[in-house]
Length: 68
Image (cartoon, rainbow, N blue to C red; front, side, top):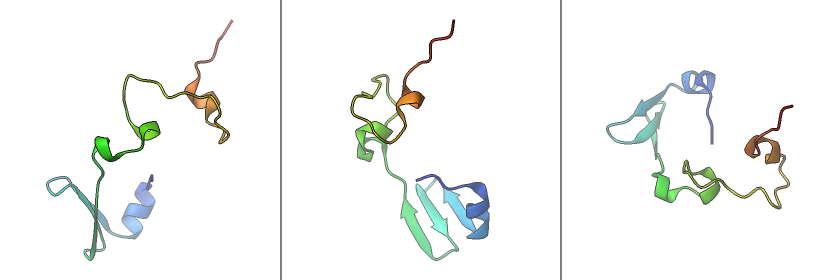
């Protein structure tokens, strides 16, 4: 999930890197996932994900474009 700075400010969020949590309005804390807990398509690694069978429109984001 991506949260914009405007949403972080609106809900008075604090990113606590010591505890590895996002604190929302001083009442709710949610932990950040480690890379091993992420789904394979969300990981930052040298192995590029396969674009075969994708239907969500991300093919163009993953494939390099050929320019002439």
